[in-house]
Length: 117
Image (cartoon, rainbow, N blue to C red; front, side, top):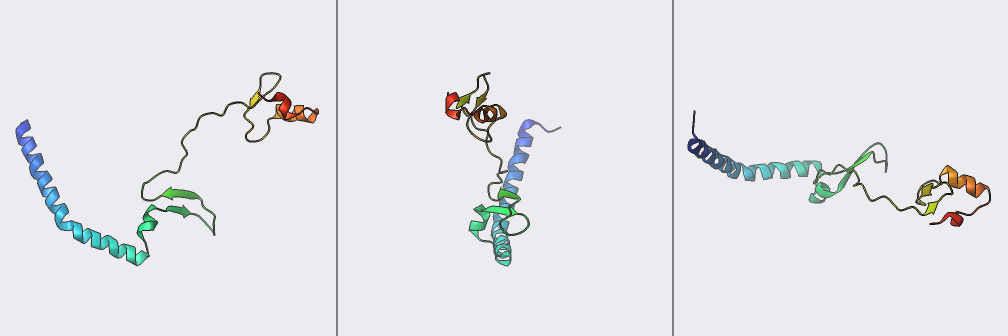
């Protein structure tokens, strides 16, 4: 069984070998990437632009950030404060569809402003 000092020496040696290989192959790899980009007509702008996948013109199934690997999901925001409050304590932020309780009150002839908070 190797001791800690021997293992650290091996790690250093392997890291040096990895760095040497990376330095030798870097230029070739960059040239290969450039050739592929040229063959497919890819520009640097394409690597950071949103990519849409889907059928037909303008129909995007999913937007993906290619360069950053962002999943496209939204961050959860803060809940919106109630803008209207009903007689039974119901609340509505004023966003989205009007809730049933508010529709019923408006149908009775009352105004939304009567229930403004």
